[in-house]
Amino acid sequence: MGERVQTVIVGAGVIGLAIARALAQAGREVIVLERHGLIGSEVSSRNSEVIHAGIYYATDWLKTRLCVAGRKKLYPYLESHGVAHRKIGKLIVACDQEQLAKLSGIMEGARVNGVDDLRLVSAEEVHEMEPHLACTGAILSPSTGIVDAHGLMLALRGDAEAAGAMIAFNAPLEGGRILDDGIALDVGGETPMSLVADEVVIAAGLGAQDAAAAIEGYPAEAVPPIHRIKGNYFALSGKSPFERLIYPVPVHGGLGIHATLDLSGRVKFGPDVDWDAEPAYDVDPARGEVFYEAVRSYWPGLPDGALAPDYAGVRPKLTARGEPARDFVIEGPETHGVAGLVGLFGIESPGLTSSLAVADHVAALLGYGKAQ
Image 1 (cartoon, rainbow, N blue to C red):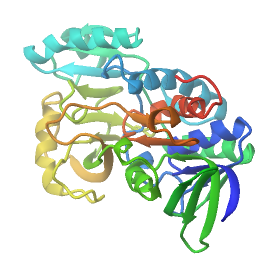
Image 2: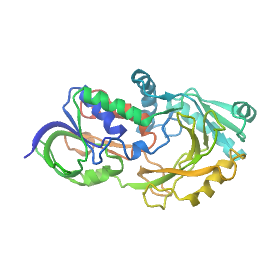
Image 3: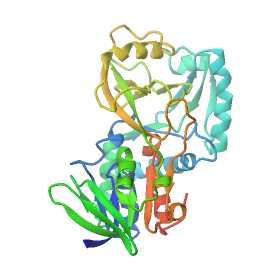
Image 4: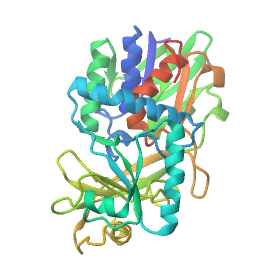
């Protein structure tokens, strides 16, 4: 039959670790299954490491509420746990009159979302703030920041383990089934095991749909399709021309090729939205042509030969090219009817920012608190 446990979480990325922390601190016996040999080796470690304000998303989305609530929780958490971060701010720049006209709509949407510290800045003021930028105007988001994502995951892991949670590495979920009194799980790896859990949370990112499909009795209609979309990054050689994050006006599928600083001051540009690529982590140098064109729309002084392929990430998107964007999908027993089961799908950006609020929301779906 298998060893009986209270809670199993599938996935030890930033979301899974945050959920493990919340449930362990709520007094649950928690085991985290991670198919790799380390924490956060996929989506959680291959992103821009940006703390988002909650500007762009639809007002009625769960993603919006979790981002705004998560950002408000995250800064104090980082401070209290000594995790490296900086609230450096972001400029969303318009490069022509058509984009300039969109800024007011972005501002109003953000205000309705609860982001109340944005302000419009003129081209002249932008030039004073960032002399190398060329634009017709911009939005300043002072509460946007950057964070050491791995440091955040280490802090979450430390809290979870201090509260009694355990992480099983190299432990892929290979199968399972819904029972009358729990959920049976078959775990592979070097030391296979069978478990029966009162609660199972699928927080497996790119593998969430596969994990759900492996559990007999998980309602297929509750599992949205996944589109694994690649995003490439290029690094700038030399000193950063910017003191803040620089974002263009958003494009379909992403936030455009933006300039992000890391905590050492190094600049990377990306990600793009590579709809047609295989979801691998190599970066094709030939994509640099697209990057030069995009970056020079707001930084005309980008020198030839200054960009080098850096790294790539893969988004667990719920939409294909040309389809409208979708909200996070976080389904508990009240949605699919299976007691003790929560599935998280399509948790891409701003998942890192939202992680603490996502954890509280999942805990509430299982009966341990109030939903976000």
